[in-house]
Length: 231
Image (cartoon, rainbow, N blue to C red):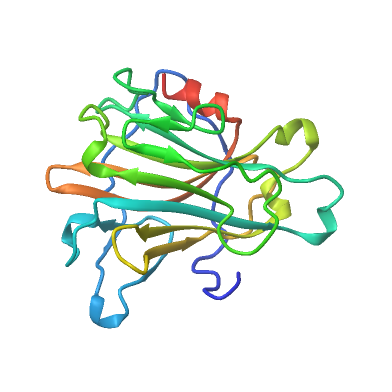
């Protein structure tokens, strides 16, 4: 798993996207809370279900970048893999917000306070493959949670699955600092099997600010399938 290694075993379960109109649990306090200690370098390696309270850091986290990266196993290079970073903006009931654009993806790259960078169609090259910029001060007040996912474009039709992907990660970067500071990183295990999507992380609004939770939930779903589950 590259420099940071695997942080947990292959216990992810492949599931279908939740049924439509089924509210999700928007609290990110189920799991192990971790804290950011600037005396130890100020960067966290997160395990599945770890969550970081962004309001408990020693510096203000207002402008962040959520970045994702991955490699395709060399034996599957016959057809390019197009993995897409996307975000689902949910209200307090766990449904897509109607106050602003509730889905940020390659077809709609902006919502209030959120901007998706260019779409990397192959994942080629070193470093981050796709980036999403978040300004917490500009997020619409009706948005209670932001679910960050990565989906293989047309994965079922191309017979492409997360079992063919390696070194996948998501990381949280503080945009306000110069140079930019990596706050947390979550490395996904490589047991994706026939899944075509993975919920990487959740950003959840609390009374004190926002939390960042590492999720690592595999799904047999497209972007549209996940969107429908939050209606």
